[in-house]
Amino acid sequence: MTPVDGWTWGRLILGGRWWRLRILTVGELTSYIKDRLESDPLLARVWVRGEVSSCVYHPSGHLYFEIKDENARLRVVMFRSQVERLRVRLDHGTAVVVRGSLGVYGRAGTYQLYAQAVEAEGAGALHEALERLKERLQREGLFDTARKRALPPFPAVVGLVTSPAGAAVKDMLTVLRKRWPVARVVLAPVSVQGETAPYEIAQAIRHLNETGAVDVIIVGRGGGAPEELWAFNTELVARTIFDSRVPVVSAVGHEKDVTISDLVADRRAPTPSAAAEMVVPDQRAIRAQLTALQAGLGRAVKRHLDWRRLRLEALEQRPVLAEPAAWISRPRREKVVRLQGRLHNAVAHRLAEHKAQLAFLAGRLQALSPLGILARGFSVCRRSDGKILRNAGEVNLGEKVTVRLYVGGLLCTVEERYLDGEGTPEARKRGQASFVDNPS
Image 1 (spheres, helix red, strand yellow):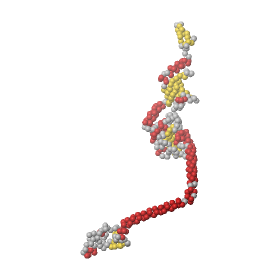
Image 2 (tube, rainbow, N blue to C red; image 1 turned 60 degrees about the vertical axis):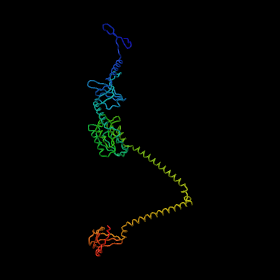
Image 3 (cartoon, rainbow, N blue to C red; image 1 turned 180 degrees about the vertical axis):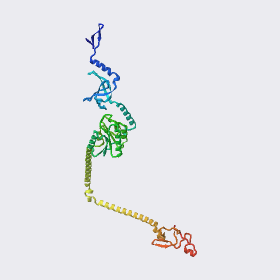
C-alpha cells in the first residue's frame, strides 16, 4: 500500500475490483472523537450523579477519582484551582453530583469528565434553600454593616460558645491566655453539629446575654464539611446573634467557609484562633505602648522644667530681683508714699460713705421698730394665753392681762371694759361722753 496525502491504496476483493480506502492512525481517530465530543454543547456543561471510587488527592493539588453506578464508571479529573474551592471531602463511597465538561485524554485514548464543582448528593437543594434564606435575611437588614457594633477594646470577660471537646476551644484559650491573661473566660458548652446544635447554640447566646457577665462573645467551631457547619447557617442562630446585646464574633470553620452567622455577627473571623486575637489586645503591644507613653511624658515634663528654670534664671537677672534696695530709689519711694496717701484717703472716704448710709438705715429701722412705738407712750396688752388684744370684747371681766410698756410691764385684772363710742367709766359718772381711739 502506498500512502498518498494520508490516503492509502489497498486491495478489496469485491467482484475482482480495486477500491480506494482511507486508513486513520490511532491519534487521528482519537482527535476526531475528541473534536466531536468537545463540540457537543450538551456535553460542555453536564451534571452527573454517582458514587465516588478510587479517589486520589495528588501532591500537585489535582484530584483524580471515578464516579460509578450499577451500570458504568466514569473517570473524573478536577484541577487544583477547583479543588481549592471544594466544599466537601471526597471519600470512597460518597454519593455526589459533579458538574463539568466531557473530554478525551488523548494519550490514554479515554474519555473523562473535567469537574468544575462537586457537591454531596442533596446538597444542591440545601444550597438553594440557603441562598433563599440569605436573600430574605438580607432584605430584613440582618446583614447591614451600619448596625454592627465595635468590639470592646479591653474586655474583662470573654464568652465562648463552642464545643468543649474540639480543638477550636483549646486554640482560643491558648491565644487568650497568651495575649490578654487578665481576661476571664466563660465557656458555654454546646454541640456544634447535629439536629440539636442550633437550639443549643441559640440558648447559650441568650444565657450569656441574660447573665450580663461577658463583654464579648465568640461563636464558632473548627473546620468541616458544609453539612457539619450547617448549624451556623440556620435562621434560629442568625436571629439570636442579631438580637444579642453583647457584641458577637463569628468564627466558623476555615477562611474559605462563610456561613450566615458570619454575615450577621458584628465581626467575622476566618478561624477560631483569629477570633481570639480579634477580641483581646496583645499585652506585649500594650506594655510597649505604655512604655513609650511614659518615656514621652518624662521628656515633656523635663522640657517644661527646663523652660521654667531658664525663665527663673532670666528673672533673677532683673534689677528688681537682683538688687531690690537699689531699685527702690528716691523717686520710686516718693511715688510709693503718694500712692499710700491716695489709698488712705480713698479708704477713709469710702468708710465715711458707708457710715453715713449705715446711720440712715439705722434711723429708718428705729422708726419702724416696735420699741420705738412703745417709747412714744403706746403699750401692748396680751391675754394669759399670749394673744395680743386688739378688741376689748376679746377679754372677759376678771381675766388677767399683761401690759408691755417701753420700760417694764404690768400684770392687771380686768374690772370693766368698754368699746368705741361708749363713754369711759369716769365720763359716765360725770355724765359726759368721752371717746377713745381704737388702735386696731
